[in-house]
Image (cartoon, rainbow, N blue to C red):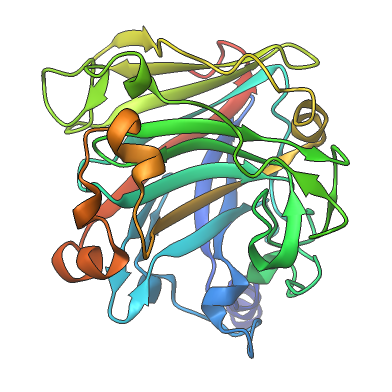
Length: 317
């Protein structure tokens, strides 16, 4: 009997996925963290992998992503629902998503992104057909991998700058190959630096001090959506972001109501992240933002998320 139990546990985690705890409507749930099939290798998308070899560490309700581990750069991971066969789908209209984050190590030019997209629960889209248990089914509003779907960037951030952005599509729900769906690749965003340069940054002089862990609350208000608002909590102090998203929500509202998969990604561009953290968007210098520079100088940079929770407005904090 013991041998059968051990075999069942090994089978359940045969893909290398790791148990992860999160909260839905006040109830603790244990699912799994799975890495995208591309990190398993396009020729062997169902190969078993060790998440730590890609800089991913999971411990209870904590998940960390390191920028570079060995030759592996970046990662993209998802939450599997209990049972490990399908993605957890969060229906975000008229609800909120909250998490704690330590982003203190993430420098200019690097993007610690936590976002949602309307991936199918079974993890099967054209060209990404490995299934959810192996990190298949990716799509987003920029057609990465050739498949488009609605995307909501909860936070594309480093320790110096942050932005959250809505990307709707037409048709407004589902996914399709590029050319059969039209998505708003640029999106509608809210970057606090544009209205208050002292709101978010690495140091005690900022309203949100990224040198210390803080809580991020994103509220999707109305059905259909009328606004997407942001609250930060740090040191028992709640602070609303001075700007929000209150337009161009008609195309993403049906998709968020249908349900999105939560995605964690860490990456850098061969160019720069000036759209996020330079000029009018943040205080960074584009000259030190290439992925090659960051991989050489700041490869150990790690972001840690914890205590992910979803529920009705004003219920998760």
